[in-house]
Length: 175
Image (cartoon, rainbow, N blue to C red; front, side):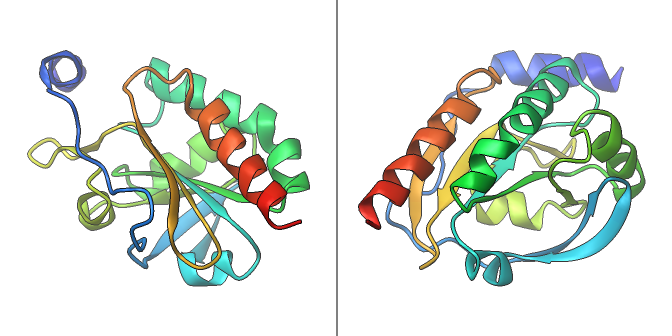
């Protein structure tokens, strides 16, 4: 039943709001997992290393979210070469995300639990607070904490390309 309701929400929801380019990204810390191992992720700490690709997705192990995780996993060598950190965020619990991080993220990048929905709400990436889903929204955040790109589309295609292009553009501007 829950999957059916998610499907209905995905197609019945109007255009989503998202934070504006140039806005200051809200700081957050969350329990994350990579390769099935949990750790504390802190946005401020990640930004000290370079830009952060922060992508929200509705639910682990759904077809679109699995496709998107595979695409990010395949693109990780390019993101790393550009000095970018990638992290996915959903409102799933950490135990489910441990499995997702291994099987679908292929242990290449972390995913974080936003079980309370607080992070999704702060980033205007909340699809349904009643059902506990985030929208499919991707951000690139510069090391100074400013949003470089904001992209919302329920179709998983395009998120990796748009965020990669933004990171490349940022890197080029640093030269």
